[in-house]
Length: 91
Image (cartoon, rainbow, N blue to C red; front, side, top):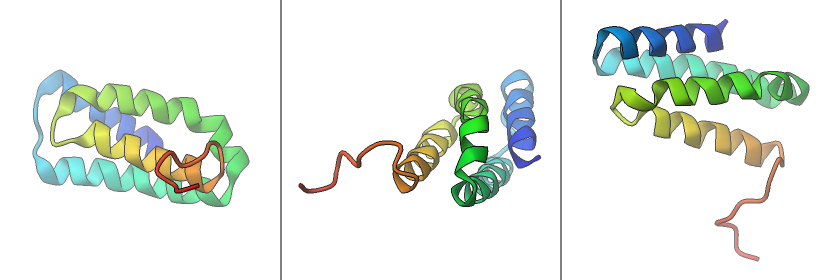
């Protein structure tokens, strides 16, 4: 539900214009709730990862760094779930 809300919100904002920083904070908060649940349930994350990627691309034109923040969020989850190695980690 959180992912669906965030995607719908991003689509509405892209279609009808800027809704302001509080709106985007709410969008990011919903995405974060989805990802927090996904961290606890990796198989759920695998099933919905593509949908989250769609949210990121939908949010790309919104501004306020929303798509960048969403990208950082999903990267953090992927690292935590060990989908790939941390490129910044010292070896």
